[in-house]
Amino acid sequence: MELPERIIRRIFIVAAERIGSLNRLAAQLDVSPEHIYRFIDGSASPIDSVLLGAVDLAIEDLSTISAEFPSWQQIVLKPRLSARQ
Image (cartoon, rainbow, N blue to C red):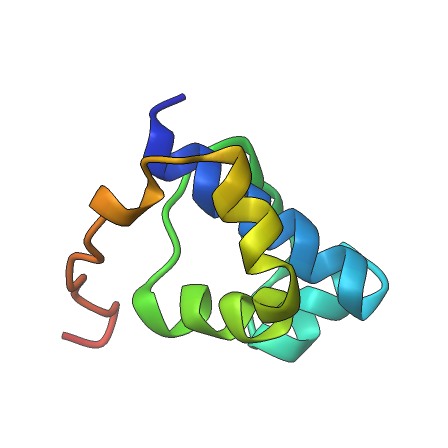
């Protein structure tokens, strides 16, 4: 798993811990629980709005996450097309 995927995985795990469960996180982010599992296992990438929703929930722990991944600053979010486009 590449560094960006590992960081995204960690953000979703922390967000789920803060909100109480993966199912609650899925409901909060308006995606299916299966999507959350796929974001965590690296088999799918979240669209930016979903990722930012998870970041909002995990924001208090971002310093801990960034300490685990010192080169995280090199990651740039790339725009993705939504399914509607």
